[in-house]
Length: 98
Length: 145
Image (tube, rainbow over all chains, first blue to last red; front, side, top):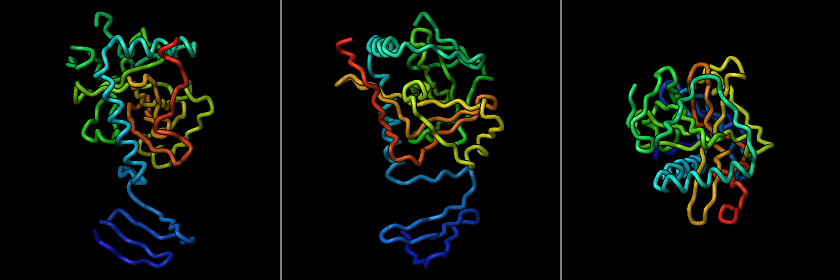
């Protein structure tokens, strides 16, 4: 890892398009400003990992048998008595014979 | 076009329905194209099916139905990235995690998927609000019903 020291208000340039600035130092907290192209997402590391892990976990539901998933979801719907919001276009119809 | 999926078998999708991710679903950076599938039996829940990898599919739900006080804020950068020019074009989806032991359902309200429905562009955004959970548990007694 490259380690550089900056004073309050100073910046780092990463490539041509990313700038990191120390905007405030308060006790143990450092406030960091990031200027980057919109196509480059910026995340706090710990939340990045939490979301990544949760996304992965979410895809494992396909290992649960169809009937169990449908039963759980069905019960949830009964509980909330949700009225489905139908989008007028752009949704695929699920195949009924599956 | 024909799409071979693990969950739904061989399905036919309309290419104009394909959503392109401008920002990744974290952990699935290589998957750029998805379609939203509606199974009538599970009305409020939809499936976000990867077009690039037929084995990957997410259960998604309108998070506002689950968390009634949900007030996510979109950053200016994301509005630009998703080319949003009308708030009415924005669709928000929460990825659902279903656990079997113990049986429970949670929704990731911390990192919803934002879709510009008109332009078919999407991104998973991570909200600043620390009080929002990646596992917002839906209170219910599944076993008892």
